[in-house]
Length: 393
Ligand code: SF4
Image (tube, rainbow, N blue to C red; front, side, top):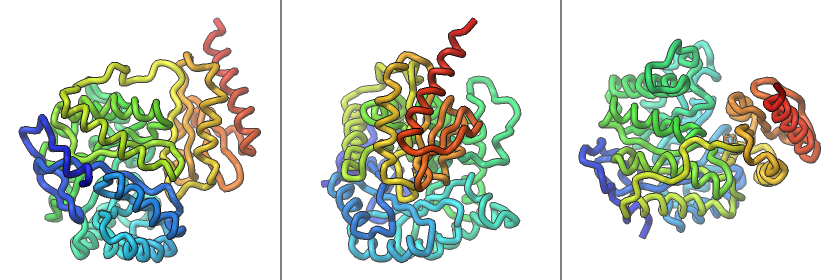
C-alpha cells in the first residue's frame, strides 16, 4: 500500500480538477499524494535508482529527478527502465528545451516561471511555455508550474505596493502563478498543478490561501521550500501545511528536508504524519508560523548540489551558531550556484556551495569564497558583528 492510497481529504467540499500523473491522480477529491525528490547525481544511475526505490518503497506517490544536461537525460532513460513502477517527475531549470528529451521518460514536467528568462533570452517566455505544453501533450505528461520565492519571475519582482494583508514577495508569486495558469488554459492544456513555495511558513500559508481563493479549480502541490534540517524543518512545514490542509487547500505535499540521501525517506514519513494528524482533526500547530529566534534555512539538496559535504556543512552551521539561538537572525545554506546566489539574498547571512569552496554573503553582498573550515569561522565572525551591531545604541 502506498500512502497516497490511504489519505483522503477530510475537509474538501469543493474539489479541484483531477490531474492524472502516471498511476496517481491529484486533485478531484483523490487521495493525497506524498512526494519527494532525489538528492543523488542523476548521472549516478546506481545511486539514483536506489534513491527512487527507497522513496517508492516508503510510499512516495511521485519522485522528482533533476535534468540539466544531455548526460542527465541519458541517465534518466536507464533510471526509467529500472524503476518501472515509480511515477517520475522531471525538474527543469534554465534549459527548458530538455523537456523534449525527458518527457517520453517521465509522467510530469515541473518548470519554474522565473527560470524561463535565462536560456534563449530573446525568445518570449510565452513561446517557451507553448513548447512545454506541446511536449507534455505529445508525451502524455502533466505539468507543474513551480513558483519559488527565491527565483520569482523577474518582471514581477518590482511589483509596486502589496495589497492589504499580503507580503511583498507574495504578490509577485501569486501573479506569476495566475498568469501561467491563464496561458495554459488558453492553450487548452488543463492537466497541470501549481506550487507556491517559500522558506517562510507564514508566506506559504498566505500565498496558497490567496491562490486557492482565485483558482479553486487548480490542484495545489504544497510545501515549504528550504525548510532545513529536522526537527526544525518538519516543524516549519507543519506550521504551514496543517492549517492549509485543514481548510481543504492542497492536493499533494512534499516535506523538503536537509538530510543525507540515504535518509530521504524521512520526507515521506514526515508528510504521512502531517496527513494523519490532519485526518485526526488537527487544524493548527502550537509553534508560530514565523520563527522568532535564529532561523536556519537550508535546501534539501538535489542532483545539482556542488559538493557532497553540503549536508554536513548545514549541520556544522547549526552546531556552530547554537550560541545565538535566541537572536532573530536568518542564515541560509544552499547547495549550488543555480539557486544559491538568489535564494540567499533575503537572509541576513548566506552560504552556498561551489565545487571546492563555500561562498559567504551578508544580505545580497558577497563577502568571499572560503574552504569549508574557514567558512564556519568567517560565518561566526559575521554573526558576532551582526549581533553586536543590533545591540549597540
Ligand atoms: S539550492 Fe541547488 S542543490 Fe539545493 S535543492 Fe536547489 S537546486 Fe538543488
